[in-house]
Image 1 (cartoon, rainbow, N blue to C red):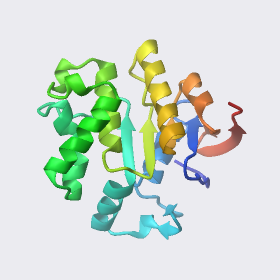
Image 2: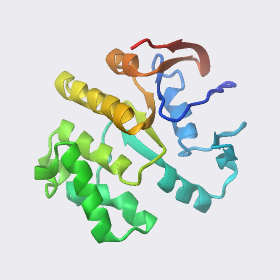
Image 3: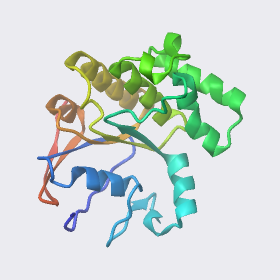
Length: 208
């Protein structure tokens, strides 16, 4: 349970939410990312009170503005890597031909062009997470929420993913809000928010 947590994120900022297991980090991320509704308080986005939107309005808002990356990828096993990346854009109503070009551009940038027609079971953990990143980026979201994005990766692939996040921030001004236990990833962020027992107990600005 969260207890009076309040924070803001600026465009182009990378924020890491850290703390022990059970501190409320993922709960905070899910509420901030509109996956869950707060019992009290409000979530605002560009001065719009989005937690007051209807379920349909919220789904449309989320699809247009937010990308998600989870620890265990959440790729649909029956679809190829390319098809998984397409899904948010198809839900948004984009034309498939245009969307395929955009999806392949992202997969190419992420070093996955030659794996586009492979299904998740044919991909390594690191490759699956890169597909998940491409899927999160396909609708050009204003914010990407990531929940332990490198938690299931070995140290090499975790490092590659961390570097990719940093490049996306530096090159594209991508905004990230991340929950992580990985100290190296947390240190790449502009700020670290420390949570404990449902409270936001401290904030640290990283000097990169």
